Length: 190
Image (cartoon, rainbow, N blue to C red; front, side):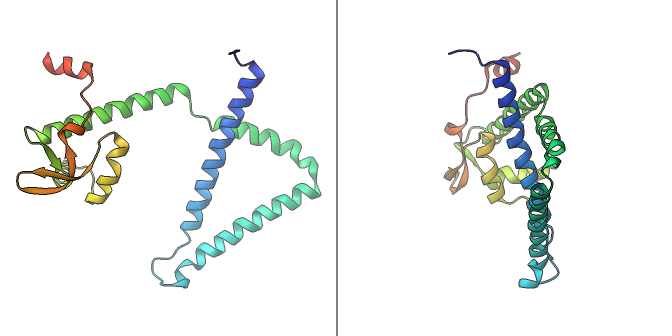
């Protein structure tokens, strides 16, 4: 397969940046609309602020389309600004690699913690793991359901029924955990 040319690489970069920019803008808009909800009210009155903010967004979008149709020359300014913002939204590759390495190290620490809590038993219940995390200043306000949702994203498989002693509950089974990385095993042996 031929190596992509410089213009193709630039176009792919621009497309990737636009996807990130659109995603970020959509998340910000959705968060702004959600912030319009009032907790001190109930029923329809509680969400009227959301509807008002949604109407403001729709009116702004309509106004932008109207202005572009009325004065198309404004695109000579908007398109370069959009492209610049799209390219700026792409994370730095070195920073991305550093955060990936940090995430891998955190995942390995979590696996080691779960292995320690399992000890010589067949597994550990999520309630036990949550208690341990909260005693050590992590997972404040979490429930077992929150932990159950987060663990698989961190590479820790969760079973609906793990038997520890006489009790059966949702937990992590020893056999489901990935084996420790070789570098980690060499460090522990030293």
